[in-house]
Image (cartoon, rainbow, N blue to C red; front, top):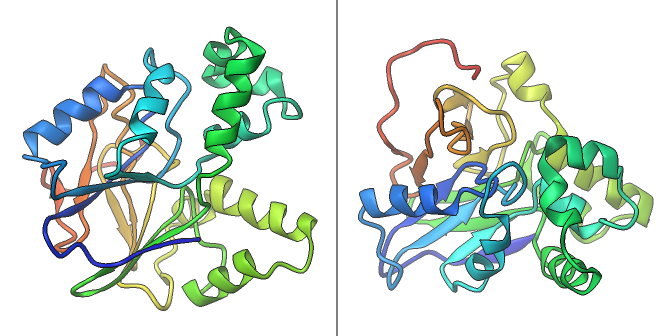
Length: 236
């Protein structure tokens, strides 16, 4: 888990799954008046696969204001030599197969540094970010289990639940996560952001050029850009 103190000089935003569409993401940031000298951008992960600009991710990771957690697609990169390659390629990973072994290893080393969870202090309370879900009723339980696991198998299982679980959105569970003002997640493409208790799902499929768009969530006000539309079916 990686921790950030409050941003005293600018705004903090979170964005949904990027999947190799960094030019579209930059357009969304420009429209929101994002100032890289003052503002910070937190990503729910899935930086790569499916889009045409996956190799640009290293340039984004080098930017001091860009802070992602690890998504399930990012985890493929970390474990590229042991993962289910057929499943990965089917889900957009063919770009990685075309890299040299040295480049693959360089990508893997950087992606291994991505945290499973991020927490950000704000004036109104603590914000948590994971890719898919917090598998515990409280944020403190997740923090303890990530930082002091009993063994490597337990840690791997916990990380996978944080990166893969769709239980909350599938069951429309509204109980929320204790110890947070809000938990921000992606992983499941939606027509519009969805709030379930204090859990905010913001993957509005900006990586689908035909019908998706990037949602930016202001972590201070919890307002979305663009503004949340009227209620409608939430699934893409």
